[in-house]
Length: 236
Image (cartoon, rainbow, N blue to C red):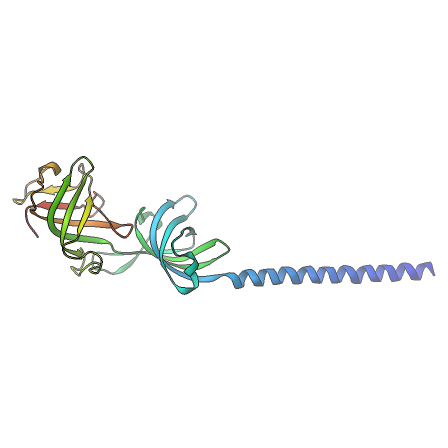
């Protein structure tokens, strides 16, 4: 009789343990299924705020998103790019392969990948072409803070000559163009080298080539290839 009770107990324990194991496996499977269901495909456009090449991630302020990621708009998020393919545009507006090293803080990027539970993984990252040419007149020259204020005649893509965000940078608008005096080329109307402080605040014509637009609206001239050129006194 005792043997029978022991056998019944062992069988019951075995069945109970099996049921618990099945239940646990079911919960784990359900959790994984739920986690997978929470993942979504995002398509985002925004500005690089921070680069971490060592850990293969970038922090991006999101300005535009697809409907699946609309809750991410207006936030700065960390995106894992270790498995991403990188692209930018060459001088003929062809999309070409590049690397994480080609990105800089302030660059505008378009990113596709998957997100969910605060984790974002990029499939590809495209650096938009924001290299422009500006024609205008000098409004203000601030040598102390290294910027020119220019009343716009036109802003065009350096590569194609087509209008750049004409609905935003309209003729007659005034923008600041920041520069690095030690490396940007300043050229007189006669084609000679000049200093930044030789540009006067007298409403004269000015041409600015190879200017990068960062953070969506900040015009910057620098020595990065192709080197920015600022020509005083005429439009080219």
